[in-house]
Image (cartoon, rainbow, N blue to C red; front, side):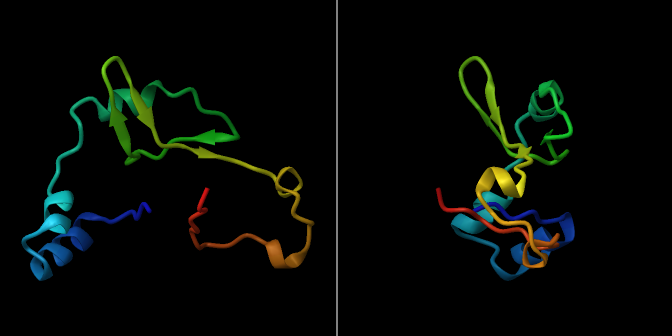
Length: 94
């Protein structure tokens, strides 16, 4: 699961939970080449990368978390008002 937190939210959590695994994870600095990896992704109308994306560096590169647009028809979902735009983020268990 991935949750986007701003600096104020991270600080609030760390005041409540200053030690332990969660605090350790929240205190980790981004990889020094994160921006370079994110900027190297060729984006389009159907592929986007957020400025604060997750990076998983490896030996000779990195995985960069990105957003891929999927139309309803591609997912086999009927076009109707129930599937209208939502401001909620959902996780898919795949």
